[in-house]
Image 1: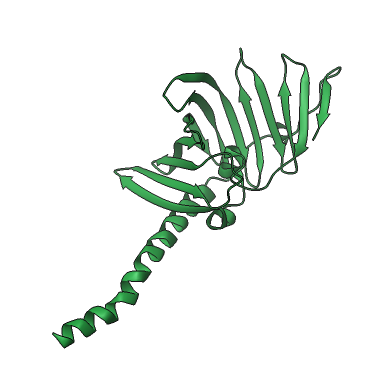
Image 2 (image 1 turned 180 degrees about the vertical axis):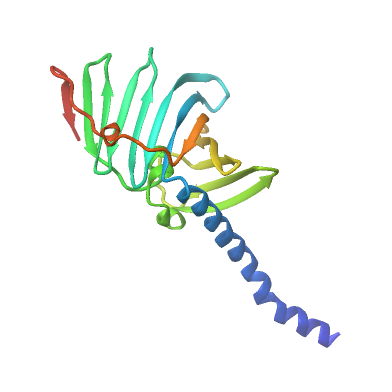
Length: 208
């Protein structure tokens, strides 16, 4: 009996390290999946639901992303908007209002989903607690922000065959935003001008 107790006690430190090892593995796998796509292009459809499941908004559009921190996120009419990042500044153009808002890019991965797909993946473990589950060629990562001042309480990133397939964001009041990506292509050449925004003549400009 004493021998068994000694073996159990000596094994406790090993069991204690297992969750940490699993977490490290999840971080490594997610980092590798994100890093292998230096550019991403494709279309997206976005559906936002309130905490009770009532549809609030449905949009679609196309995206172009390039590491580090460059993206062009264009939402189709009738709710057309264009968000462009050159890695330092983000420009949000609303053609209906003829207004562009320009602000410094917040480099925190928790602030912009587009930045999570195009930003500095070395910061992922600093920003999130990460778990994963896998079924066939689909792997889901659940990301919980470590900071409190974030746009969402949890984020699911789903990869199919090594490419981003969809994501879901849930905020503090239970509102869910589901984004499905289609026609995704990785590491295609991208025109540099895609990440430059020229303010249209006569547009109102708001600097933040």
